[in-house]
Amino acid sequence: MATEHMTTGQRIARARHRKGWDQATLAEKIGRSVSWLSKVENGRLPLDRMSVVGQVAEALGVEISELTGQPYRHETAELDSGHSAIPGLRLALQQATIPNGAALLGNREPRGLDELEANVRLAERLRQDAKFTALGEVLPSIITDLLVIASGSSPDRDRAEALMLRACHMARVSANLLGHHDLGWTAVQRELVAAQQVGSPELVAAASWDLCGVWLHEASIDSAKNAALVALDQLEPHLGSGGETLRALWGALHLRAAVAYSRLWSQVDAESHLEEARRIAEVLPANGNVFQTQFNRVNTTIHAVEISMELGRPREVITRAEHVEIAEIASSERQAHYWTCTAAGYHMNRKENEAVDALLRADRIAPQHVRNRPLVRNLVRDLRDSGKHRRQREVSGLAQAMRLA
Image 1 (cartoon, rainbow, N blue to C red):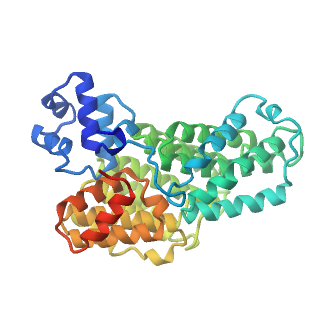
Image 2: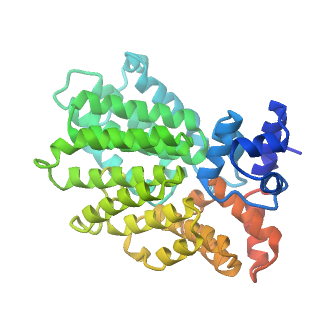
Image 3: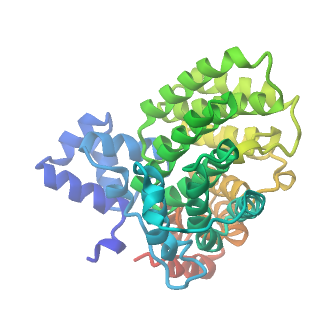
């Protein structure tokens, strides 16, 4: 079988065989039954939580992409989600991270900072709308121009570094979505450099928030949790003198910690951090989105749904999903994330018609985001094969578009 068509279960079996383990050995190491592992490897039981996939990857000693099969390629440029821009983005990030990388650009004349800031704002809108192909077309040149300015002695250097952090955040999101996790790491390293150069608490917190994001995508959950806790400790002394931006970053870091703890199956800690984020969100703007965190009241309720899903609490997923005022958040990416989490929750509850409805709604909102998520692919494959819902043709069409065997 072509590796691109392998299921997550088949990839687990391949990695297990490579280590010379039988199913009983792996099952013991992850605290599961042989029956459970057999069903996963045979495709009869979907892996619908990143916490579980990460646990299996850790036990097998492989990277998460070994089991998810990322990156995925699609038949059309529209759904290929920026893959064509990856070589240019990789080069721009390499130049931005190596010592004296600007010297490799020759006599490049960058755009002015006012124009670049406008370009960054446009790119951020594309990122929130999950239009990653369009984002990939503009992002490499933004990073390269900012590198030239930040590498000089201009009085605008700090401003250029702050914009560099925002641009590299978008590069990180794109890279992780597509499964190029090494590139996501390169992007966040440049964010950390920008934050260090400027030294403001806001930039340090924003870069730390994104560092947590990289490790969550890589299923390095302890690292993500520790990064969030360290960042919270560093930020706390500045809260008294800071404004809404610092408080929003404080809340966003608590959400990162909550997700990490949920993937470690620590309900008490996850709910504690979620509650602190809720408390902060209630006194901040309803449309808050500092440093692309989308930290606001609605996003805390979306995180609550995700946390219940990762903790394996199916009924709570649906209960919490029903209280999300999803139309109030101005981010297609966040809306699609909500609907995919809700779909997974319905599937856990064996409500397949509702699961399909939620999944198809997510795909209509942000297909470039949805079709590149490993757990969505598992869900689509399982719903296609079950035949226990009324929209078989649409699900089969989605599976075909995603090139699922």
